[in-house]
Image 1 (cartoon, rainbow, N blue to C red):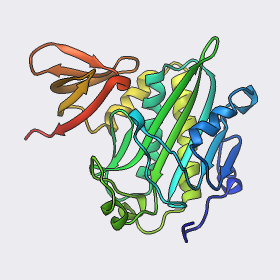
Image 2: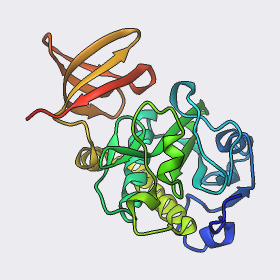
Image 3: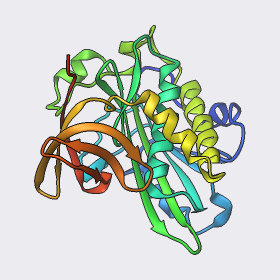
Length: 268
């Protein structure tokens, strides 16, 4: 276990305001906080429950990728939304906005969203989001998994074979972060933005996402269903995903489930 201060369910709960985090469950170690959260989904009273773990044996990201983290050095959590009427893409957008806003309060550089599910500081990944859903009449159940690098040092990332540069809140901030405070800020931000989405104010979510996006206006290359596309990012649709003005002409939308970002290029 890390020498840094541990997570404490009582300290997190004491800072929370409403639905998200109305109950906090903390594990020393588990296979995946998403898997544990789904175990609570059969009881509607568990709506808003959040599962935290100091370590994960099988933490996962998009497309089967594994979340790398030493024990006690990250925020690893999953929030449970039951019988929700928010579209899946909107849940992802709202969660990304919430995590980005929370992280921004602890770092010196610029926190931005890399579509569809990453948060970066000055281009280096600091957090990832994995949204899973299951049908539930008349809405859907969601588990929103979040991983935030907190106490990792540069040597930790140097030992990994990463697809893109990564960083931690400590490296980008002013010393060891209080993970309990940051965890509570994340859950309060989730609560705030999920309320906006459920109230039908998806436009506010999209507007804030655009303000924090790293992609709008950039030339991007992506893979979609084993085909490669290139063009300029001109927007995002809450249901259909990223909107590109293609190099070869025309406008096309790409949903997150079937899309992998290859690179983004800032044009002079």
